[in-house]
Amino acid sequence: KRNAALSERIRAIFEDHHGTYGVRRIYHELVNQGHKVNHKRV
Image (cartoon, rainbow, N blue to C red):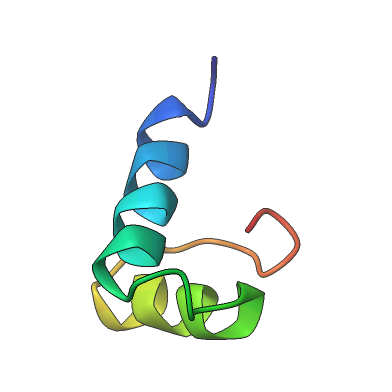
């Protein structure tokens, strides 16, 4: 799958924050970590 690594990273961020992060927070966390990703992809 094309976005397998991204999906794993999203799940890791979600689990690290005990399931309280939504799409916006996860997107901003990915951007802060240096990933170039569209918010629609998240």
